[in-house]
Length: 436
Image 1: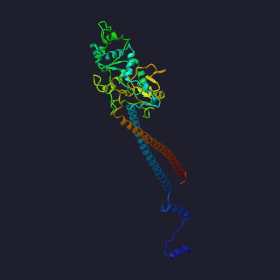
Image 2 (image 1 turned 180 degrees about the horizontal axis):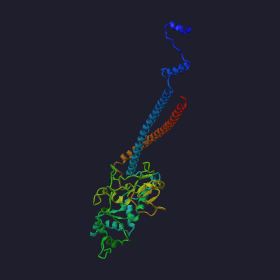
Image 3 (image 1 turned 120 degrees about the vertical axis):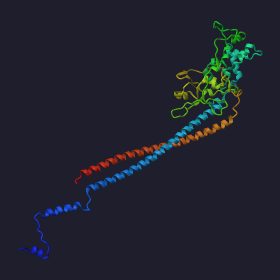
Image 4 (image 1 turned 90 degrees about the horizontal axis):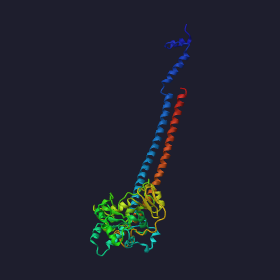
């Protein structure tokens, strides 16, 4: 006989279902099964991946912003570096032009003390020749006596036709101080040297007999027989045997000064106190500027370049010694410093008896035809240099600021990367260690 519930189910037409004793386990199992496939439930792995993805995206965005900032600062640095480089180059070129123009108009060494020179000290060419004639036993004195004879002998004309003159009278220096320094640097023997165009002129000054002894009946010795004997050796310079300067000349310079490579500091600037090259500080008569030697070279590129080479001139001994690493041949300073050659210094007091010097003053050579034009251009160039230096200082300040900001942004970027890496590692470790 069926129970009441079973009977009721039968009456309703439903098939009765018997529940087993393990019905609780079945219910729990069924609920677990439903939970795993429900669209409303999110797994722990998905939550972890989404969180890491958000962190990575945020990190990437901030990293890109930092990198963009660094790139922009890098472009600013490059821009200011280019400006600084150009302005330095422009300033150096202006300095070169200033030095050349100062040399051209004789203002390269003028100081307040030099501007007050006693006019009685101005040595003109006639005074220099008189001082040469006082040295009676010198070949230079004999040559001038022979040249000044009212009725020269036949052999006198042979001697004089190839001789240009004596070194001391073939150029002029604008003031006595520089003239004395350059003359002392060359020495008395060189200042009294006779300059010939060709080697034929050299041979005419002195001849030898079959035994190799000097024939005193010819050449300057013959002149000395009537005016006084030669005293020892004398120096002769032959232009055609000299090795001339090979290079360019300064543009538009009527004196044809040499475009020598100026000394440069590591920064590219001209050393402080550098005034120019001695070879360009000699003013040469226009008659001796064109085709004097047999091969067509003028006195500056032949005679004076061989005498002075790249001799540098500085305002003071202190300036000269500071520039010592950049002095390749020799140097002098206006206060008496002398470097004969690298490692060779002339010490002590200047000679007070140096009376054979280059003429100085304005009585022999006139001012350059374009003197005032050069002077005006010099003032304009000096003003342009001042303006360029102001621009250079401003660009350098902007460059320093850009570099500072770049380094600051770089440190911020490196610190951000380190923090991001540490943060991501901590979160990853936390997800892996937490129970699922």
